[in-house]
Length: 534
Picture (tube, rainbow, N blue to C red):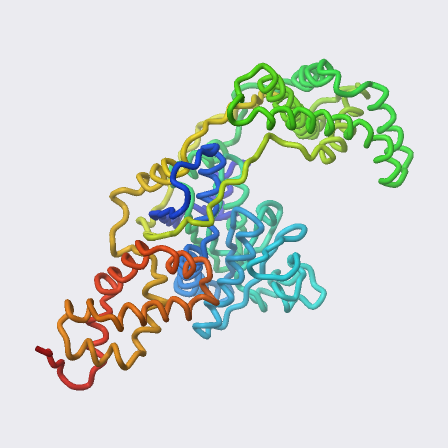
């Protein structure tokens, strides 16, 4: 039963009818050590993560989501429609949820939101201790209910909650027929894109429209993900059941465990013993591997950075990479067996034993490739713009086939090191042509401007002086500093960066007097006509 047939027969909706992408552009400045040499991939990921969690960036996304929901989604189904926000991490989900609640409260809107994620999130900027989805600080109205039950519609009514924010949860297997809107802030590929957006496709009386607002993905990529499933999905080739044997042979050949270890762990599991008993058998194997990795890491670090190409350093690096790849291949084995065993009867207990053994050992191996810390404390967001692109219908044509993937084909790639300043410059160059001075961070407009606009002294000076004279007023410089200090409690990072950098203070003043229009707005507040002093 193909997706196309299901849509045509109104069994499900076409969720790509109203697809609206957004384009984010920004510019960064860095006041720290210019010649710091770091791992390029680690630094790039850290920079992108820093921008995504920046309070201003989140606030702008939240504003778009809430206003779009109120205008386009909320009126559907007699005012009972719901929406889901898909974020890329648990911390991001928590920050978005807090910002959304703050925005909604500031506007006095009658909207309630929920946030859902597994485990606990440590957000030291917002809370004194880790929080879970059931914490009163996040979801105070649960009253003992699960997130699923609290968000679920009852008898066709939206109930208490209109918007659900999620992180790696409820993207599959979640059936809420009143769901009409989805806001995506996460990279979606292949079947994950189909499963996630298909949360919207549930048919319901009167439901004939859905909306997708995507801040991250491109329409052509989403369309590419859906097309293989539009017609009846076919495999271009059959899944190879022998791949699991090949991967077992690869793992066994490394001699990082013994068959006796596998048998002992499986025996403890099948005996129904407590976790402590299983760990008692498994822990010696894990400890040996962890110690092996730790020894290699010490040798590798001792030869950094001056002697990183020496034979001992290269041997230590090869050892760490091999252990990291071993852990990755174990995870691949477990996932592949879980899928293939539903299709093929292996009739081989050794295959299943290893699936049990690898799954348990994988969680105990806490090592990874060396991940260095990149200091981004001096990073500043100087420009920001989030532009809506044209809403479009993505037309599915089908006809593509699914290609089965091979298991255990991973490899470890060498790191590329580069100066942090060059990495930031490269990030900025991505957005050349997409950003202007009018996109300067609205920390200026929303925070500093508000404080200066209430100053009677500046109102008087703007009324009685030319713009040039006003710009040279020592009172203006002093009062800008006072406003920055007053904003310290709510915007600690940005205020600190501004206070410590003369260049940023000059740029901030230029924005106030330029695109922000401080002088003109102060003059507008005077009741009488402006008087120009000589």
